[in-house]
Picture 1 (cartoon, rainbow, N blue to C red):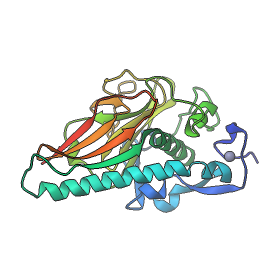
Picture 2: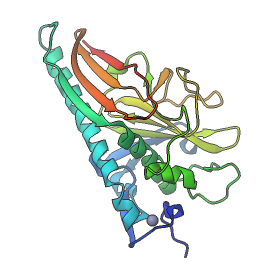
Picture 3: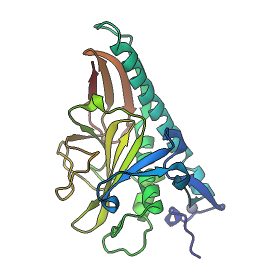
Picture 4: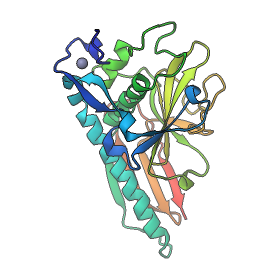
Length: 268
Ligand SMILES: [Zn+2]
């Protein structure tokens, strides 16, 4: 039987296959997750947590990803606290100068977490008639993508984690994770994952898209991706309450290509 660790292309598997949560336990709240995509004709498919645990990585490659899970936990906690504090402050009289609450998130670790989650989901619940590489019959993720997950390679220019700016951002915060596997219909390859992470809409693209453009693949915009304008690796996410800055999540991208344009939401 072939080694089913999806990171086996790294060539250094060790230990037995271990149980990996398809989506890290740390970001799951209601013990379920919604998937949408071609496989479900655009309707959310709710998956219980028991189905999210799968033996798809060897022990060594599973353990090596725990810093990514930790970073996702920090991001999730920051989002929760920002939403909680906004809810408290919106019930108070408007002020011009809230005591600013700041949260720091490691951008590259988060970006790699989204990629490993996309791969986990696709390995566990394969999208019908789609593959990572055009024409490929096996479902193994390409070596280059695996190298990116493990920090041994970088995303192509203009690919990676994008945030989506759209109207009504502040109306959609809820504690859940939604994932849409996006397939480029020209060649049936998996080209992106659209995520709703605690209400924030993000798209992880595996190939470049033009900066600032509405995100579509062959004219298809997934329900949780748009419509909206994308920005690659935003540096900050501001929460305003009654128009005044109240909380900020700062994404540290280090030397990675990123956008010095913040996301912003105004909670009234
Ligand atoms: Zn392995």
